[in-house]
Image (cartoon, rainbow, N blue to C red; front, side, top):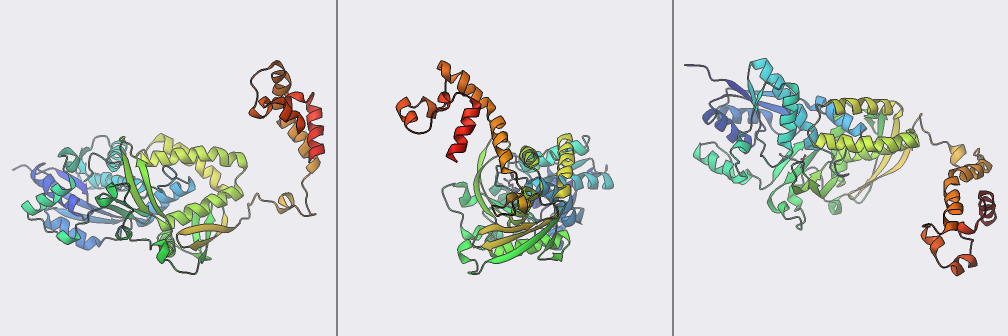
Length: 439
Ligand code: ARG
C-alpha cells in the first residue's frame, strides 16, 4: 500500500478546522499534520492538540510565535501606522502571513507536498494564506476544504455530528472570531445586521466604556526608534508589554471599533474589533512621530502608511513593495525615540504629553512669550513670495474677467465697502502693505 502524502493544516482548535482534518483524511486521502500557532489567541494549546489527534491528525505541532508575531509583524505595522480604512489595526491581517510562513516551513521540515487552511471563499484570510504560501514556495499545493466544498458555517456542525467529532453545542459561538495579541475580530450572528448594536457579549478584551472605572488612568509609553519598549518606566519584553496595555486599555474600554469594511473580494461587511493595546500604541506612536519628524516627511509618510495598511489587508506581506516600504519606514524611525503620556477614561484615550531628545518642537520658536527667537519680520517676505502666484493671477486674469474666487466675484459694492478685492490691488507690494495695515 502506498503511503498517503502529507498535508500540513493551519489548525486553530475550533470546530471548522477540526472538521477540515477529517475532510483532508477522507475526501483528500491525506495524512494530516495539524499546526497550532500561538499568536496569543488565548486558546489552551494542549487541549487543542488533543482534539486534532482525536479527529485523526497523525501529528499535532505547536509553535509559540507570540514574540515573533509582535517583532516581525506588529511592530513594522505600528511603525507604518497601518490602519485599514483608518480604523482596523489589522490583527487578523498580520497574523495570517506568519501562520502561512510557518505552514511552509513545517511542510518543508516534514516532507509534505501540500498545506491547508480552513478559510472560506468569501473572506480576506484565504487571500493572505494563499499569496504568502505561493510567494514562499510556488510548488506547494494549497488545499482549502471549506472553500472548495463551499461549506456554510452550520455545515461544520452537521459534518461533526455525522463523523463523531465531539464538540459542545453550547460552546459553538454564533460569531466568527479571530484573536491574537494585537486584537480580536468578531463577525457573523446578529452582527450581520449593520443596524444592530453589537451585544456586550461579543467583547472579551474590553469592558463597556460606561462600566469602566470613574477614575482615569495615566500611562506612559516609551519608544525607541518607533518600537515600544517601556510602560510606565518599566522595560518589558514585547509580549508582556502588549499584554499590559491590553489589560489597562481593556479595563477602560479602549479600542472598540464597529465599522463597514471593504473586503478585497468586493464584499462590504460589518466588522467589530477590539484592540486596546494596539490602539494605545498607535495613538502614542503617531504623536511621537508628529513631534520628531519634519513636516514634509510626515506628509509623505502618510501616503506610505496608507499603502502599507492596504498591503497588509490585501495579503501582500511577502512582496517587493513591502520590503521597499519597510526600508523607507526604517529610515523614518531613526528619530522616533521618546515617551508619550496618555489619559484613559471611559472608552477614550488621549495623549496629554510627549517628550523626545529629537523633538523638533523648539520652545523658543513656538512661544508667544518674550523669549521668542523667531524672526517675525521674515514672515512678511515669505508670505509675499509664497502668495506671488495668487497675486499675479489676480492682477492679470481677474482684471480681464477670467474666473475668479467667490469672494472677488461678489458684487463690487460689497467688496469696496470693506477690504479691497484682490483684483483691485494694483501690485503685490500694495497687497502686502494693505495686509500690514490690517494686522
Ligand atoms: N475582516 C477582518 C480581516 O479581514 C477579520 C477577519 C477575521 N477572520 C476570521 N477568520 N474570523 O482581517
